[in-house]
Length: 422
Image (cartoon, rainbow, N blue to C red):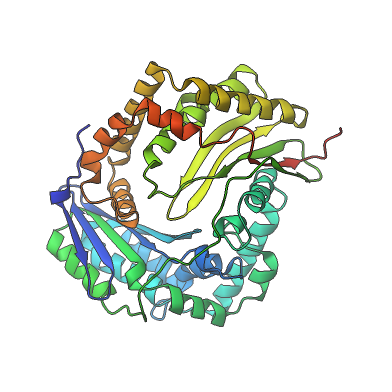
């Protein structure tokens, strides 16, 4: 696979305040994309579930220089876009504009990340939106099953025990002062990455980023908090949650997975691909959904980040088919553990992984996010040059060992839907 990104064509700068800036030029496009991360997600909620999400959601609602409506007006005037998304590990920023408007785009992005005003009227609007979202999710069987799974699979105090949404009682009681304190403590340049990709001169883009973010200051370096270690269950951990008025059951079956830094990441990622992702939702989707017609959806997913996120199978089924669907899922896990992938499956997976990356790198936004990911996980600027050999060099035996990390007898299982009759 040829790639438009080689290490020598990416400029990596670390500013005196610790912020890392990556720039890749794409001449002729006339546009520019910015993707950034700040490691200030709900890993820092510290007993206040929802604090990080509240703070992150309010960033774009007004700064010390521009009101929320003014930010929207300035972006609209340029035909630009900018969004902020708080998550468990990071808050991400994504922006696009014409290349000529990069100075204003970076100025707004820097204000949003470094100088939010948390105006009282906007804070109340955000609070109302977050509480509404929490209440809606409390009636969504898919979300209810996920929350129950997290409680089963992760110890209290771990970010994945809770998830990013938080608790209504916490969100209802947070003040603007709480949000300002969170921002002052956890939004810091040493925890920030900004990737700029587009029709721009490299030196100009670096200078603009330095001017926009160079005055950002914080006390002390960023450090990952210490959390209780998640461990695979010793046996079956199960919870069923009745959600009145529903006709579908959603299930989540799985274990704590691995971090992106795990040496076996690629083998586990490929094992998951065979299990429930490749083609029509992998072997699980082919059996449970396509062949037996028991599920509206059925797939597996691996959430490998700075922390070991979930490795889970998820399905939406008729309540009468819950037990059969679980049995079919476990059958596919055991089959893959026993026999491994077929040679044609392995070839398809390698082609898919290299091909899908090429598709992602067709846009400036995709390249910017990829560069930010590479920096976030410390993969090295030559990662994309090495990627095909990594995928093609991941052996079948390594993949079989990886799928055997998913225990077929000891796992967490959460089911949410109408109360089932026994």
